[in-house]
Image 1 (cartoon, helix red, strand yellow):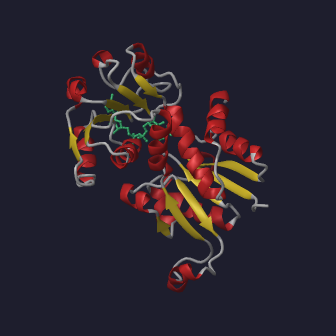
Image 2 (cartoon, rainbow, N blue to C red):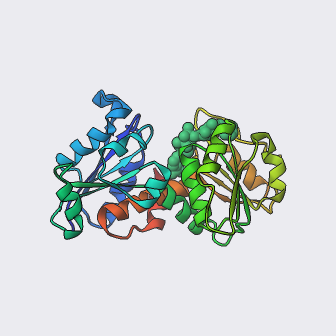
Length: 300
Ligand code: NAD
């Protein structure tokens, strides 16, 4: 039998998160002993800067893995021993694995360094791997020539890398804050040969759709409390595919407009489920049943 898992979710306002139920239902279906608990900054009287200490305390108290969400994805890094390549490249962590057994010879360097007693904590980013998996699972075979990404914040950074890793040849990034789009384009500036990334003005998005195969929303626009669409959707035609990262509600105004225009659509639930499934697999070493997790998610 696998070891019992105790997973924490570090962030602000995590009391209403769907992650505990999503993880626990998948674990129950696999017959695992698995508990998933919110560790809410406000309830604990902590600030985002405390996330690094909190993750170490959690590991010491027996947590076997952690998810990390807004506003701690950067600040948690101060408490970690190592980062995966994608977490390092993004400067953001949403999953922490806890390796209690430091007797592994591969760990001897970290052990000898002696900087941190106890378990070895590694930061990873399943927003990145999750969007990539979601795109492959939910929109298989869509053309990836030119893609417009609207929103260059935390989710946008992970999505941008995932799009390039998926084979997008030209990625155009827009944000209402042009400096953010420019910074993301500069950070990702030299992807694999044969692909290119550029910042474009937010007002240009509808015109740029003329040359684009697909468009991704990585802004909060469309979620509860943020009505509207992140760009003028009248330029969408059935030639386009459209992906949204917003998942509350699943049928955002953008998703509805895209369906009405005849587009192939990936709602934000695909990414939410895929990042949870990827985290579950990192925590347990077992494959998640993604179709079952999506069915659970639609049920919640
Ligand atoms: P963020 O604040 O880091 O970034 C949002 C960006 O959108 C900012 O750069 C902002 O300037 C830009 N923006 C806002 N309104 C815009 C508009 N109308 N047009 C263009 N740009 C605009 O936020 P984030 O952490 O990246 O989260 C964004 C959304 O992604 C949230 O709704 C969050 O819930 C969602 N999210 C979903 C998943 C998932 O698994 N489905 C994962 C992570 C985040």
